[in-house]
Length: 201
Image 1 (cartoon, rainbow, N blue to C red):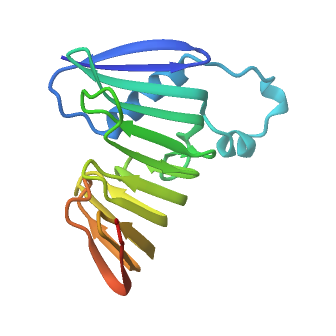
Image 2 (cartoon, rainbow, N blue to C red):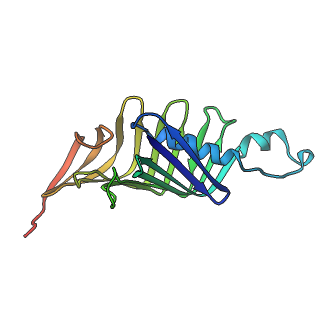
Image 3 (cartoon, rainbow, N blue to C red):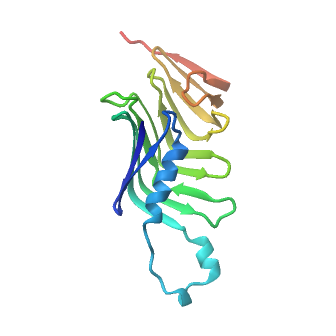
């Protein structure tokens, strides 16, 4: 049984789902449920229609989401602020102060993580945009660093046209543009700039 527990300053909620394969989209749903419990008081006659459309429909502060499977932690998502714009075209959620996702896979310590200073999620497209000091560490220990990347959930594809630095066990690859699967098991750099060999001795 897979459990998804989301906590913010406004309270907490526990969601239970069948199956063990849950994507970050499920986490966003849990966050949205928490945010729907919040309310914002403002006199209707002082708000213009154009102002309403430009404001976030939901806001969460200090949100932490924990995904567990059979009592073991699989991942933890943390963000200082999430703002959801349901009235925008297309609708999106914005992580204006960034986010961090730690993957545990039932272990006591994280085996992988993703961190960025800014993130945006387009619900209709199932598309994530991470930018500003993006770092991805996969379970094999390879680290990817870039200023912007996109994650297409439906196609299970991560890609970017920005400069990228991939650090492995014994070498560093630097180039511009890349694409990979979501676990970074097969990274393809489009334009190589340099390969730096690491002396571990």
